Image (tube, rainbow, N blue to C red; front, top):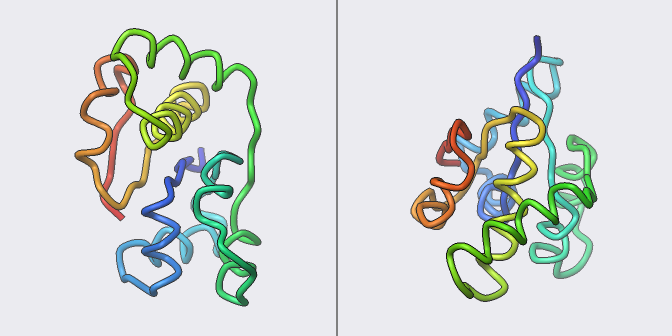
Length: 127
């Protein structure tokens, strides 16, 4: 089975900057050894204009808009309290990973600490 990874904005930024760890995930996807998923809200947070690097990064991923992930994220957010827009996007990343049995790849694993208890079994890796 091909492992699935859900990328957050920090992971996309790391890939765009050519960081080695983030780039490894894209090399794995290129040879068919990983599936990279990006929630649509992450693209909105990351996108600040077209560049060739951004187009290349998106071409290696599946962009997903999931109502089920949005609902699960909303439930988690209700339990942790208001965390603002950044926590909302992180909750969508976590919920997407939970629904896909995937691993979260993030630029900052600490961002996900408040949500980890609501999505048990979701592993978090640093980009």
